[in-house]
Length: 414
Image 1 (cartoon, rainbow, N blue to C red):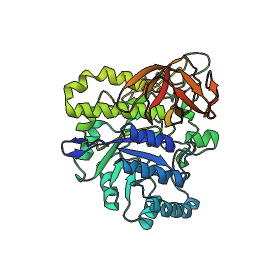
Image 2 (cartoon, rainbow, N blue to C red):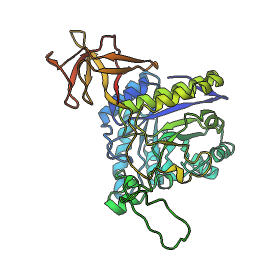
Image 3 (cartoon, rainbow, N blue to C red):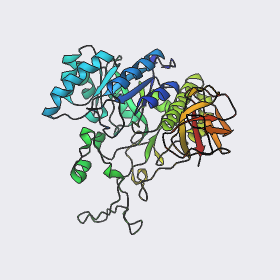
């Protein structure tokens, strides 16, 4: 973990993880803290999420390396959720995450009853848009509040100036944007019967629509790009890699990356790039500014939808949306994470996409190096040679002609 300090405030790079493998990658690639979801009460029900056993192992792994782990329990709860939540918080208390992320006052109340000493962070889902809201949660015993995505940096600075110094502000700096206010969406429930506020979002904001509004003459929505309709709710992704100085000056403590549904390659790429950018700015602002093209090049090596600065510099306009497609830009394919070495000196991976002997691929290392190599050999678990790795999640062993380390990531340029 890096000891990142700015004007006396300790900074945190907060990275998402969908499962135990991704958590370990996040820790190894520069996270100061990782946020995860259990198998219930989080807003990413379709993510793989963590069993209590995996959560326990992940927390131990992170703590051994000076990294914190936060667990989401940020659904908007119904009556029938409350008894289960009480039991769930009792279980979490035994395995010791560093904080709970909560949006619902009922869930907050139960967490405080069951585990009075736990740090609680108030989720962005709670619509945290002004300093009186922050003061309210501080008086209830919350340690941190996640800013609503609809806030400008100027508004966040005003919040910092009107809350206790020891209270923490967490803000998103990279990842997918939600069309609905503070992520509180009704579209999914209305159109698909699956409640986004209970972790079952079907992402209807990414669907294709044709819209006609008859009562607003002269106000035209760009819905006629082609005969198939348009993606009018589909936001570009947030990216603040060029604006780290402004975020620091706003008084933000924790810089949050969105993406609890993302791969290890995505998590490693954003963690490594943002961590490097923050560290280089703290070391030498001119170095940071000179390296912005490099950061942008690196961050583009994970999937994205085109980029925007969201609400940070004012309200978004029509240029913040993508009207002609809902697909990601993808420049690299994720192949796997290096694991243990076998008796033949080959390196184990669990393959995620097909690659072949003789193919040129890239090794991504936690320290920032990217090494282009040629695949010299692939074997299965029994040691049988293979020309390619066609089966997803097959356990393989590879020789790439160089020494590898555990948690190196293999990727291929498209």
